[in-house]
Structures are given as C-alpha cells and as structure tokens.
Image 1: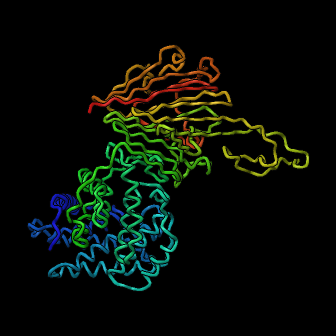
Image 2: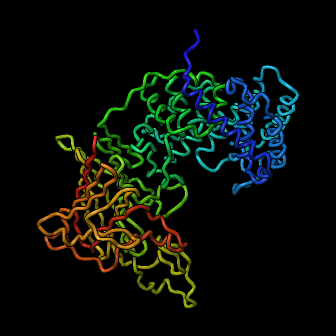
Image 3: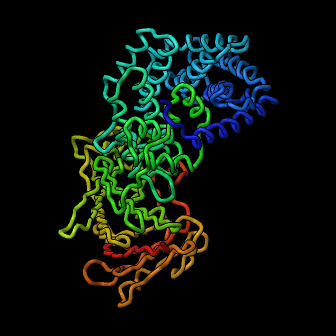
Length: 589
C-alpha cells in the first residue's frame, strides 16, 4: 500500500519552485549570470532540472518552456569558473574544497534528477554530459583537499556521498570514512561545536542525513535527531531559533525555524516523532526557504512527502539547560526567558570569528513584547561589556531556579624593570598584554592590578525574572542596557534623544520602587527597580558620564561596534553598586 502523501507540503514546494524558476528565467534575459558565484549558478541548475520532473510539474506548466537550455548555459558558465584543480573559483576562500563542495552537492543532485528522466531528450543528454564533466573534475580535490571549519567536514563528505551515487568509486567512500573517524562534533545537549543554528540547518544536519542514507549510518541520524531535540527547546515564541550562544555570524541574527524544514520532516518520519512533526508544521508555515532542495528531495527521496506523524506540542512550562554552551532556556506558561553565560571571551580573551562573543546575557519574550537584549556595559580600560565566565544553575526546595553569572576583569599598570632586565638601548620585546600591545617586555615587570568584580543573579519566577547586580572593585561608571524590540511603546522613563531612555536609579533607593513599562499591543514587559545602593546600605553612587554602551577596545580600535538596536533603556551608576530589579510580563491570553 502506498503511504499517504502530505498534499499541503508538496503543493507548497511546487509553488515555491515555480517562483524560483520564474525568477531564474527572468535573469536569463539579461547578463546577470556573469556576476553570480559558482554556488548560485549550481543552485539555479538544480532548480531548473527539478522543475522538469513530473513530480514537481504534474500539470505540465513548464511543458512548453525550455528549462534545460538555460541550465546548459549556466553549466557553461560554471565550466569557465572551474580551475585547473577542478575546484570552482570565486569568493574570499581561494581554491577551496569546502566551498566547491556546496556546488558539487547541487550539481550531483541535478545529475541524479536528469538520470531519472522518463524519456531523455537530446537536451537531457547534453546537460548530463556537461554535469558529468564538471563533477568528475572535482573528485581529486575533494578526495584530497582540506577544510577550514568543523561543518566543512560534513559538507565535503555529503558531496562525496552524492558523487558516490553518481559513480561509486571506492576512494569516495574511503575519504568519507576518514572524516567521520574524527567523530561528529556534537555535545551531550545536541549542539554542534559551532553552536550555530545557521550551520546546523544549512550544512551539518542535511549533510549528515545524506551520508547516513548513502552509507547506511543510522548513528548519524541519531546525531541529527539530538540536534533537532535541542532546536525545539531553542525555539522562541517569534518562530526563530536562539542564537545568542553561537560561535558563528548568526550570533547576532535571528534564524527562522523554516530552514530546518527538510531535516525535521525526515527525522519525524524516520523516528515517528510527533514533536518534530509539530515543529515541521511551524517551519512549513514560515515558507519554503530552499525550493530547489525541497523539490529535489521530492524526486530523489519521495518518502519526504509522506504524511507526518500526528503533531505533539511540546509541554509548557519546561526548562532546558545547555551546560557546555552556558545557556538556559525556560518556556513558562506566559513567557520565554533566555539566560546566557557561555561566552568564549573569558577563556580566549579576544573577539574573533569562531568564538561566542555576544555580551547579551538575558532575553525575555512576552507575546509581541520582546526584550531582545540585556547587557552590562562599563568604562574599564576598554575591556568591553560584562561577559560571564560560566552559568551556574541552582534549584531551591520549591523548584524555583536561580542562575548566577560572574566575571572578574583585571587591567594592570607596570613597574620599572629590574636592573638585570634593563637594556640601555631601550630595546624591549614587543608583546601583547591582553588589552594592547607594546615593546615593554611585560612578563618581566611587576604588575599593579586593577580589578572589577561583577556578579549577576537571576531568579526565575512564574511571571518573569528577578535580577540582582553586584559590582565591586575599581570605582568606574557602569550602564545596564535593556534593548526592546521595536514596535512598542515605552513609558515611565526619561527620554535621551536618539540614544534611548533612562530610568533614574538613584530614585530606586526611596521607599517606592521605580517602574517602566514596555507595551506592544496587549502585551507588556514591566521593569521595576526595587533596590539601588552601594551594597552597604548607602545610596547608589551616580555615574559621572551619560548613559552609553561601550563595546570595548577591540571594536573601538577598528571603528566598529556590536551595539544592540531597538528601544534602549539605561540604568546607570558607579561602583560599588547593588541593584535589584523585577522583570515581569503581562499578556492577554
């Protein structure tokens, strides 16, 4: 008996593919293809070929349209971009096996689609021969070339797996086994080492699923399933997947669940997972983000179109701690709270691609009202904002959760060199002391350290979170920044022109708490300042400078910033300080 088909999914894939094909054909009328990179060219070939298959065009919409002619022209352009090594040129990564692997994956799919044509025409045969030549030329580089990043191993391995389907040479399988022998970089919580939703969705998950299928490796499906489990718990009320802990470019970008659609469907079907089917339904409602991929799957992996298991909504309330990433996500009945203490800055001491750099330590979602980012900035030797060196979670006898985030930062002044270390020529070794570089032979000098200690406590409540801030050590200004997502109205604070708003912390020492509300429609996030002191029972020392976010020397030196956007509310003061505030949500059911 044939399994029932998910007609809604199939119809949306066909519609999305038709839109993509129309766009490609419109491009063909001009000279726009000359400026496209090889990955864009390969994707277009795949889309055009997929549209010729009856599964994707059952009514013959494209029957009288030449789709393979433009695909051949794209293949000619790709051949022009193929260098002597067989790799495709273009982009910042020169002669790159992993970059070319992305194109190989699409071209191999296109070739496999052509081979499934019912009655091949001369156009089919011509394009087939062109793709076979392009792909054959890449094999030496892909079986012998290296990578940059963790996910590249799986992208190349997926390309090799597809090439194995095209022509099952043993060296292709051997190279895949060599990469897999390193072990897949997934932690106990289901996060890949790059912690990136973008690369999990676009590279690691789809690649591992292809490798699992071609080489019969169900253990790789297990890995993807664990990542999708994590993804469901990282899913935010706005339909995006949390990325604050990412080590890649998406740490400051929302990633929609839509990009996980095919992996969610595949694993939901393979493992009978109702919760993943629920997530796949949400992803589908966000749209088909990769029509060519989805359309190719309908032909090459027709089971992807089966009706999913009955959807099962994840329970609320629930809480998930991602220990290695220093992340806690709590889905309460009326809100979602995210706490982050897993920045790599404490260990690495630098801002760098491949590190988790975000200083955002709290996010709060209450329907349409969203507190996108809470950060603690300070003026301390250009060291930048507070970034916790870990996340400690404790649970009280009644089940309430308390999270502690802490950081100690130090800067130094350096004493004169001892007599034995002096050079009459004044010629001393250039070194990096962690904050800046100079020809000072730092490690031979006695240091006078200046230190700032910061502890942030967060007690999760039924209606939000109670925050406590303790700052001791160097007497410097600090600014707590709460950045709300645009679209709402903030009331109860003093306007600061284009810079945002300020809540008067000194008034918080009075008997009555100071409160600010951010309303978006019927949803409200309330900020209530209930304590502001020096931690010794005295009034909070006032800041000597205007509220501002200080990104730190590593950004300032290059004229950059990682400042948050939106409606920004500031609470300011001077060390020593103890501040306690309540963040509560009020939502209309």
